[in-house]
Amino acid sequence: MNFNPWDLDPGAIQSLASEMFIRTMEGLYGELGKVIERLKKEFPGSKGRTSVFDVLGVSPDASEEEVRQAYYAKARRAHPDVGGSDVEMIVLNHAYAAIKKIRGWK
Image (cartoon, rainbow, N blue to C red; front, side):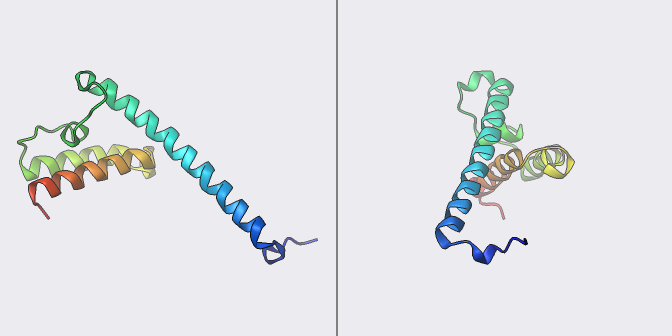
């Protein structure tokens, strides 16, 4: 007998989708916890608060080129295609975007 997804009732499909969403979020939050713990170890004086500059490893007065180079260097190691994780890349992307917004860069 072949499985036909159209034979499922809408409640079963919604339940399955919810379960998949929950499992995905649990996985992401587990990964996020690991990234946060690693950041705390890298920046012990931050007391759990890490600035976007700390994430990229640059000083708050770094030039646009220094910030860009730091972002790309970390992204090469954090990207999921080279053994990093989605969450690591998300954290880097948000830090880089925040710095660009703070400084008014495009």
